[in-house]
Image: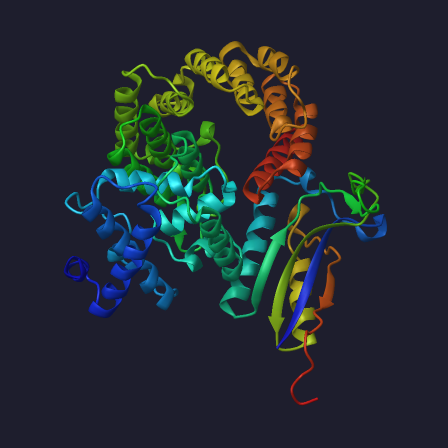
Length: 135
Length: 367
């Protein structure tokens, strides 16, 4: 089994954001989208592949150490052009192919007109902590 | 003493160890603070020590009825000891998170694992939080009493956490508040209990089958639990009759006025505004001012509500949600839709965010 992170973004370069924003959908389409997401997580729990899922607020700041005795430097709130993580799901699956398949399914969540929004998701393998015992 | 513990379900060996632990505790704390009822004190402490031992051995076993540290068996556990334990767990030296964890552990008898699950943190993290809290309190057992308001704040924090995992924290908070109310006669304890009961009565109506939020206005009031509401209102009326008003009684009065309305249009908004004015005399809280603006918007119309809102800080949580609602009622759908989107970005939880996004979508698709 291998763990993967599926990352969702609030904002990306325009060429990656080709769907109608949610506030311009109908309420029924919003419900259908949320329902699809919930069903997806429920199915992964049932198949034993779900690890964690969290959503992040779009509000936040960048912070940096500014030397002993000084308060940390902040730069923010994030300007809208910055690539903003909206949330993630962690899955534990048999293979890379299975991870790709699931990310594809998640990206097919319905949007305006019930059409798949086809949003870009980032799929990242977890690094292990220790070498395997057979190395 | 060992016999008493055995009759309560303890095995002999553990009971013996627990009594020994209790005697050590007595040597430590009695010179400073001698209890009025030494035997009762010893039995109570020995029983807790027994429970600690049992839990340490089987932290993963499900909570059982007999693992209820606050057995209110009057013959052996005095109400004073019960109350002392609540105060200790809400000690001002503890952070709110630690006080909450310790209260659930020591007063509520939940396992560390259950508390960790309820607060979505690893079990080791919660175990550490609880043991640090215990260290902070070591040597301060059952002496310096804290304030009742600290105890009530902790219980209200637990209540507001709601439920996730297999532990229903709202129900647990109500149970703990009931035990406290039975042990101490204080109008604010009654006020908090009434507030919790009335809120809890609406729980089933607050979400759709799919988990979407339903606001007070749109709730199906036939799904409210009328028995809980009646109980809450009864408790509140008795408390109010004593004329020692406090914040929780006022909040319960507001909740009661909502609960009393058969239909949303029957809500007595002018009286709700008066209770918010009262609430602000106790504590000039910006959140209470924001809720007051909502009530004024209902009592005197959206323009009056917006005028009140204008005097508040827009960084307040839910500020834009309130403004969106008032603008929509004022017929300004376009700006309301934009404000709902803005409010969604500031929402603190998914249910609220999705709800606000749905409001924006509704206005935009109606236009």
